[in-house]
Length: 220
Image 1: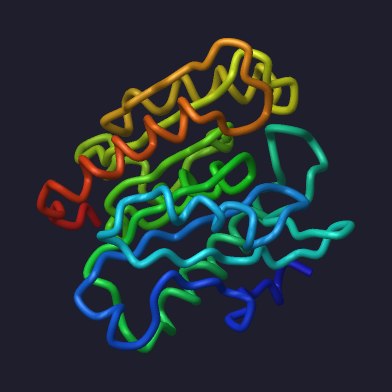
Image 2: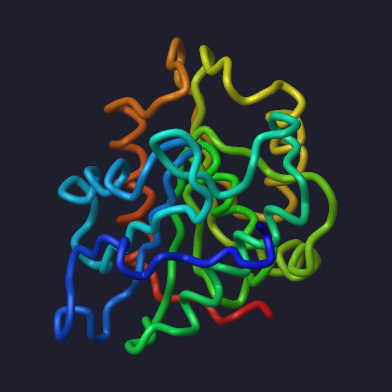
């Protein structure tokens, strides 16, 4: 299954098309396990207007939704499955007829893990990542050294009542992000595995700050 992993271009939801995409940054939105491209796309009206938003559908069918990779060991996914999903997103980006001038990442849960993993796989392709209730995968990645030397902005938000992401994955993320990103970390008291209004406000502030600042030089 992993060898044929691809992004369904027809399922991508766009906030702008055609000429409205020209010379604008791109924000890739990556949903969580068992969800779909329309889930986080519903946040689009609340997000800054600068980027074109593209919500991707994960490639693997699961129940009534989709997944980026199977859950065999929660918080510690199979590396080959994650690599296949990352490769699919990068291939989709490569094939865009209108190449964006910069690309940011925003994901929830499994999509948050994907956002960080994409940074680690190809830090030169992205400007920042928003990781909502996600985690950092185990093992080393090709871009880890570059990120340690030239860290990129990462927003990491999570709730104290999240019983979906294992403690081991949270601790791994806590250990990795400070040394490989310019980290904005927010913890929300009593928030389960979801996104609150307070967190959405913090995400908007983070994104607005990224779009006020010039894009950095590629790190790899």
